[in-house]
Length: 457
Image (cartoon, rainbow, N blue to C red; front, side, top):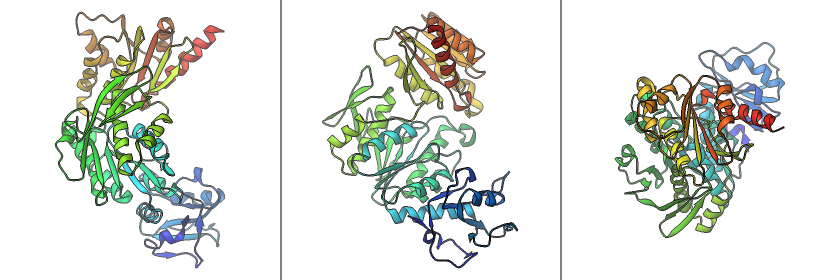
């Protein structure tokens, strides 16, 4: 239960003398305030949450944190409780840390350039077989979202799975210190946030900050196939991969719906596209075994897996074609992995790529886009690129000689992409959609599906 006792270590004084209060929810956003909420007004470069306390009260807040020195509105009801603190953001984070210790679940922290959400979903599906599990909702994985996630977990939670995102140095360390994970994962190292961190080496260093908050005797699982992670040596580190690994993934076989693979003497099935997701599943199997789950429980969790949308999401088109919606986000690493996944799906005559821009790649963005073209080979048959940056992929393909693609085009609009798809797709076609979030490439799917549905009327 969320009570005012969580605030004792950080409260300078209160506005009113009251008995202990209970809260239904903790929120920093007046739009999500409900009856019985504690409102936490944050201060940013262009906003001050204290200005909205009256709106929070109208929406049901019964108390608020209040940063020392901030003026009180004249209209503030006399019975409304305030907990005065030095810094509301720090107070939110400390409140979460106290609540984490009070509930005392097993905590798993997940970071990495790609695959955090998918790995979180796989792990949640497995651990929920054994006990009550709560996981990061949406993209609540930063210095504000992570403490709100912790404060949102039920008091009966046994396993808490926390995504940890970042854009600069020091951020993952702070999140890890708040969460104090029993186990942690670094899924991989990609190219996202290259602008802020300067290099892949910088990205690896920032991701590995997760071990700073790791509890004693905890384990950190990392990608042994990534040289930047394989180079780390620490007693807490367990390396997972397809070769030279502490936990070796073996006998990987693609099926129509996903993969079969082995770890040790046990075989597993995964109904997901992408060989990289086999590794994500292996991290989760390792964590589950460390928490004492049986092989049978792990297999049951894998079998009941439900994924967040737009992560290699399988859809059936109006002509019976397979649409793979991986449009939530993209980096060169994840785009290459998605393309490789499409190449490995059996029994499709046409394999179509619809690729859009990738953002936040820094000064080397042209070369990084062009690097994707290196894996666009048979059995891919059609390629469409959309966006100024994705055009570099198109140009890199055209520079190559003696390719046997049926069609390579650069298109200017989403409507044009949908129109071209309508002309070539049939029930022996698989289509991949992949781009950074800002491209909203899933809109092409919507336009295409609507167009073909009308065409069938």
